Image (cartoon, rainbow, N blue to C red):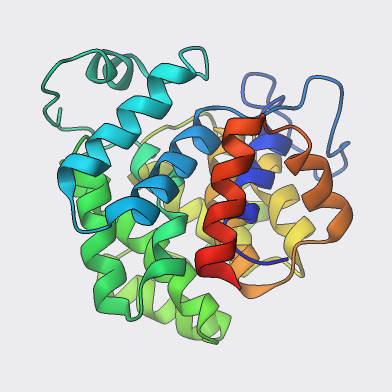
Length: 262
């Protein structure tokens, strides 16, 4: 299975390591406490927007608010939580990685890289209108679109470095020792992309991301979203994550998959 399932799997697997960081790739993928967080909720809000009307900014805001308020304890940042409760929410200059973690559905809807970029920017600016917030969403969406359409890892790397000035030549083993929790796009998106670039398959991507000891669920969601456009997600991994969705989220996931991923 390919598609936004990679984002969901990364979130669910990383959920128990967000506040209990580890610095090893040797860990259990799932345990009793593994579950979806805000990364999955808002990713599926974006999916719902795309299903309903991808041209409408009003529908985008409405769907993000609807999903966010339905799952108030999903683990949102303080400013985003406040945004959810505003009658007429305005962007708040965020440079956080929330713009990148929710963007994966866009690459599966867009018919061209240019369309993916337009939709990715729109998906970001309603909250994350800081240049770094927009950049993180664009870089992630570009990587997924390029992976989906058959680009090699080296081609993806060159494109992201050229257009977004991220340093993707670092190695995970060099990053890991001094890396810590970082919710900024600038400090987490490049590292997440590197986790994909260095991986041998989907599972290895997720293990790379969590082993950094940072914002585990979000970085695994970002890296997983790219990896699941490049490789198939193993059935045992996808099934164990899908089982953790409730009926509402599962319905949106199935609708999106049937409309855009098959």
